[in-house]
Image 1 (tube, rainbow, N blue to C red):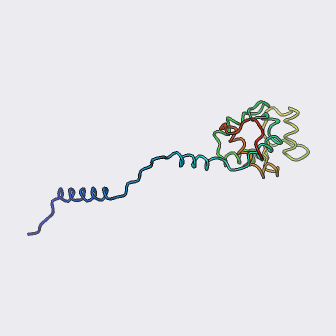
Image 2 (image 1 turned 90 degrees about the horizontal axis):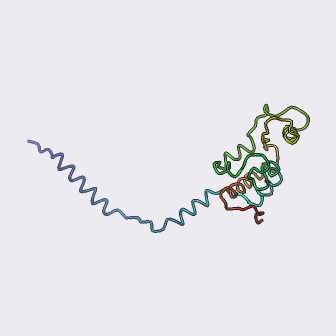
Image 3 (image 1 turned 180 degrees about the vertical axis):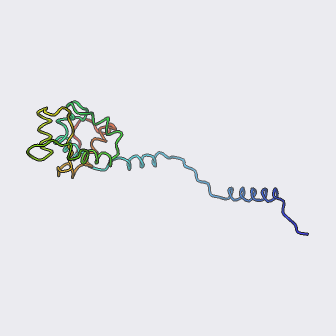
Length: 163
């Protein structure tokens, strides 16, 4: 005659073993999670030079989007738009948003022609030019994002950032 273990006895024995194991495991307690949260927030912020971004913004963007990126120049308020964009989406919109078939025909480079038409209000809809061919914007696009992101989050006011 063979002895078969009772399934309830096995379950009780297993539960008791797991209970002992759980009691012997080291217990980790977090007393102050604020430093970790602050570090995560800082790492999530854009890397780049606020001053460099401000400089590029003043040279290339302020005439349409306003001196403080608030849309005062007639183009969209960038402070509202940048809040929802991550750095990758921002770079894509600034550098590669428009395809060549959307650019107007005419003399000069496509960007120069588009800017001329926008300035002269010959185009019905005003569209931001793609800045992929502009070496200044291309080299400082992350600085531009850092500046606009800081403005959108209230970490940078309307004054010129420190170098």
